[in-house]
Length: 219
View 1: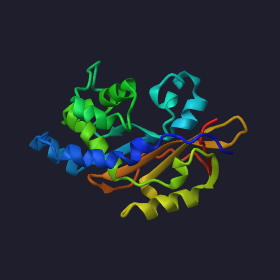
View 2: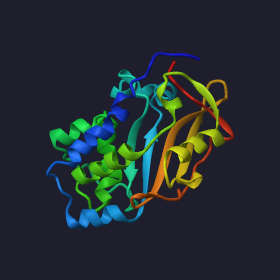
View 3: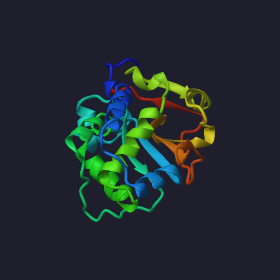
View 4: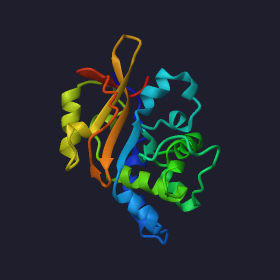
């Protein structure tokens, strides 16, 4: 099935913007730098067209309205969850321009910070810099960028992921699906797991997509 071309420019152009940002003067504290070098991390990527179609309550979110192919929903730093207690992340305007490319919705950013970032020793600025660092280095299969819908074999998709990313193994990726109207499993989330700055094994794996699933390009 063919549909309109979805906006993927935010993700591909993002790594360049990250390099520019990292050349700035916003340095990590010693504590934050040490935290970034070790520990289990999970980068959570959402398949935006699929979730926009499957969950009507999302229809007014920016990524749905503007046709993003995928977005980041958060980074689990492994320090626990839900420590934010209503706190709002503080991000400079310059950094926000970069973060907006992969996390365009204000509510998503706030929830990610309150649920995961606030539990870590990182400031909100450094937490979102961790997200942009991981996302900027990650390579994803082309099927996620065409605006078309595909049925793909899980083995093929995972094989592409591991081929594109040096050091990644099948255990580094957790695929999450929801059942569609025709009882097809539709890919909604890709979790990529790290140990510090290197790929690691995923814990608490969902892996419910079966042997094949649909990558949705939209309606």
